[in-house]
Amino acid sequence: MSFDPSLIAKLNNQAVRNLISHQDFDSTIRDLAAALKADHEALAAMSASSASSQWSNNASSDLPRITLSEFPKSLLSIDNWMVGASTDDGLASRPPPMTAEWRTSRTNGIVLYNARHHQDSLYVYSHPILIPTEVTAVLYEAGRWQESERTVDNEVIFQLLQLAAIAITFNLAVAFQQAAVATAARTTTATRTILPSSEQESKFKIFVMMQRSLKLFQQSYNLCRDTYRNWHHHIGSRCSTTLFTLAALNNVAALYKALGESETASAGFQDLLSSLMMCTVFETDSNKVSRYTAFFHNTAQLSYPDCSICAGSA
Image 1 (cartoon, rainbow, N blue to C red):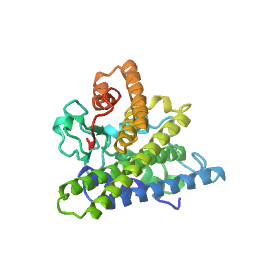
Image 2 (image 1 turned 120 degrees about the horizontal axis):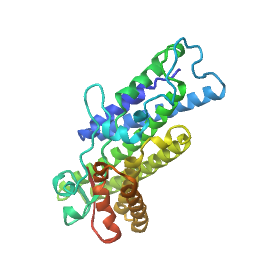
Image 3 (image 1 turned 30 degrees about the vertical axis):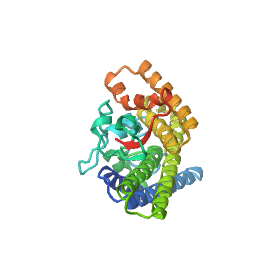
């Protein structure tokens, strides 16, 4: 392959480190944009090669390869990437527990729309997604090893690249949302000293970043839905997407609310509530259900639509 899929994981996971430590959003956004571009190019190259029969599973290989049906299902679940991924340096992508205490314990929620009380704020799931070490290893050999040396089918590589696209798009949305929150914090702190024109410029910058975040969360949701729908006859039905789906639905509705589009936000919260109700009916693991407490908090918007708005982050 002329591309290097291992670069995709490297750029994404470096950006995740920056997001977790709230560092340098500009370089983080550049890294994620570069990772997403590389991922799209890799997918396009593999699709073109497949269409022209330039690669076929197990061709020219002296060793049997791991097929998609044999590949660990845990590594094909975006939810597992969200809650259990790790990298070689030990950095774990485990989001904080989403319990009722998040409203009073978190300290980094920044008011964007003059919320009077912290408890009136909206929850945004903003923990980024790491590409797991095992997946990084597969992508590394895809870019660095000869065709005959690879241990997995090209179909596995292609599916992992699709999952990476979902994760990177979500992370890019998180980066813009967090950058908006950070800009709002600086603007709020400096309100008494900055000129009115500078304040207006900052508000416009925040608005643009929130709009971009919203669109990217929507794209990540659509990518996830379409990818697993296409996989359904293979492995899609056995790979959980519940947490990702709820996080994306929640964030889209919360950002619509923050942007002043209350009717669209209410429709989004209704979709979120319906999905949550389905989860509580069919999910037998109470620990998993408890993860969704903060999402339930947001659906209170359906009963109290005039609640003030914060774009806070977990």
